[in-house]
Image (tube, rainbow, N blue to C red; front, side, top):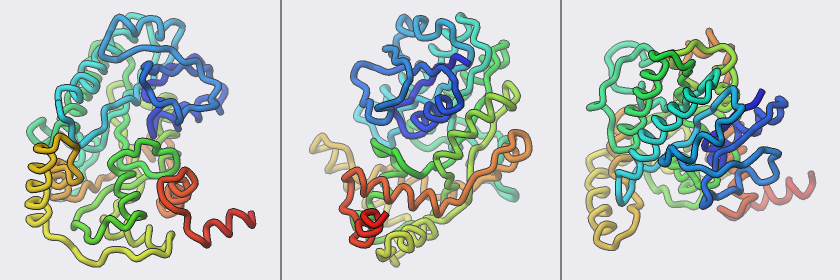
Amino acid sequence: MNVLVTGATGFVGSHVARLLLARGDSVRVLVRPSSDLRAIEGLAAERVFGDLRDPATLPAGMQGIQHVYHVAADYRLWARDPREIYESNVTGTRNLLAAARAAGVERFIYTSTVATIAVPREGDLPNEATAATLDEMIGHYKRSKFLAEQEALCAAAEGLAVVIVNPTTPVGSGDWKPTPTGKIILDFLQGKMPAYLDTGLNVVPVEDCALGHLLAAERGCAGERYILGGRNMTLKEILDTLARVTRRHAPRIRLPHAIALAAGFVENAFSRALGREPQIPLEGVRMARHKMFVDGSKAVRELGYQPGPVEAALERAVHWYEENGYVRPRPNHRVARAAA
């Protein structure tokens, strides 16, 4: 199978590329000249240069491709110029869909996000049948992904075999950037989290999330969405799990949302004045007002998707950050590694 992967230099995309190579596929990855290539270092994948925002650079990478895995996204909760997020996520997706259609691609797997589904609802947990609106999307990242998902659904309605996957919150090794979720883990490891918010996420091992992409390509129905999730956990449960893994103390103070929001406004004002990225993105605080819990049983039933234990994935994330110099390794971890 000849496949093209966008976003292979990112967290989820690098794991998707590795799984495809392990399966024996011929993998081509779309990268920009400025891309950080650490995530795909040593991979036997063909690299082609292109930019999703420039449609003229995309046809060459599509030649001979059967399946496209469009994992690339501008995943930021703050940007000095929010138009950059829309250009990458919405315009870029539209351009890639058009290039795939022109090249006769057989299957197009679009990586959306659980944010387009996990909106507050009374009764049962949100699932793929939940109809959200653009007005319910908090912040530019979520709004851009909602609009990009609409582009994918339109392409499917027009005959392109597009399958949409909606990852929840992946954790594990290889989060080089790191993502906003990785920053939560790093803040805990670096002792920068004195308090926590009463919020929650659905957490999934990144390796299982990546495998879900391959299952969606094999078994998913065109025009359908599939949540690639794991376990619904409060932020307190996530931090307590990290505390057990690392033998560090979890924060005990629950911070009211009103105070967190006020602190975010103040910090963002100073950040704008100084021209730097805020440490407390307002979008993140606003998102935390409700727990992003979902029902991911559809992928289990229809794709054969089986996510593994989150605790082990969080431990892999901790070890990876230690081994790659993001935080100082724990003394007992160094001894264990040396003994091994």
